Length: 266
Image (cartoon, rainbow, N blue to C red; front, side):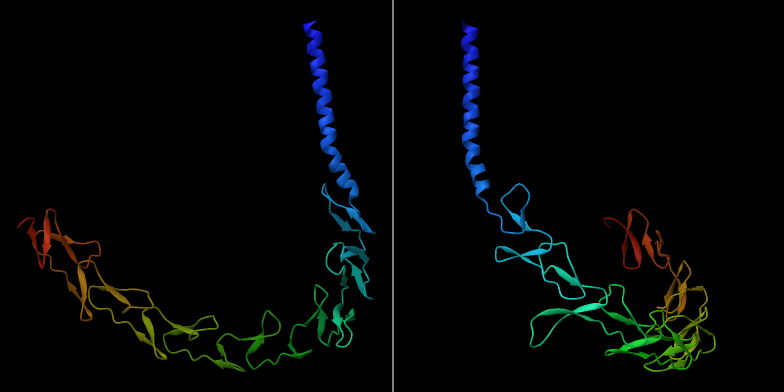
């Protein structure tokens, strides 16, 4: 008896659940059924939205046919104007007429249509001048650059606005590549001074340093620079050369006191 009552309770619960779901889904189905798609549109996703079919675009809540001009092709997106000009053509809108059209791109002599097909570039050896391509004028001792619309100077010459000027290399110097600077550098042991290469004078107990700044030399360990020479570092009692080799510090437990090392605490 108890088992039959339990089965009846389960059946009643199941019927109640079905009735509840039907009651909840009814408004949703009714709401979906009430959505009106405009002509030439289709529903999207699981919501209540819609989009225009290919060849149409949304305008004021309706789907209007895309009217592409001559020399244009339709695009797949449902937004925008729905067309693009074909290769070799560009958009144009007249001053008195707002209608958009596709007009042929006028490619001048010594030029070619660019990769995207919506413009043009000059051939190598020519440069753009307004709407035409004019030959690049090479001065003496120059060659065409990698871009094809500019020029560079031959080795041994420096570029100015319209010419290549010979680089005068002083004695004890040599040419270097590059479009900036003097165009030359000094040999090892020399440094540029105005338009010459001046020899670096290394004092006794010094050695050459290849650097563009400073005096071009340093003192050996145990010596310090003094008035253009290398003077020996004088070590006081209980001191040793520091890491630089050009000064000293006190041995522990002594501390520096002017020019001597004194015991800590007096």
